Length: 101
Image 1: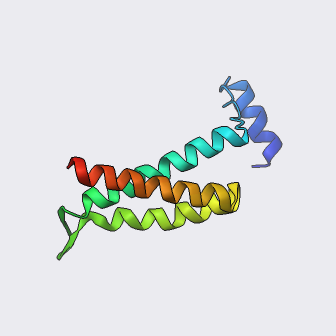
Image 2: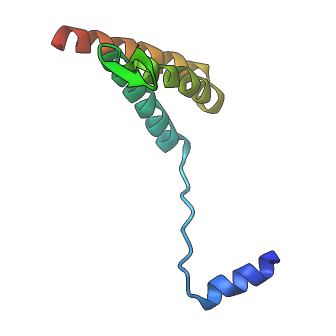
């Protein structure tokens, strides 16, 4: 089915369009850095738990592997200064969590 026909079908069905989300640089920085901090803290906490995956027993700290990909995303999108600041903030947050828990 050609794209024009699909557009006409959707218009006739009165399917609402999904609005585009536009983020500025500050909003993107807050979201990306927030998720990095979440993955880092959750990965360190989950590393103390045991999980079963198939027939294997492993720690649940595999969540921590998301931090490497996310850090690369922050570095490419926001720059080295924001990346380093986020890493230091993550270290401080994990230090505070280790003192609390």
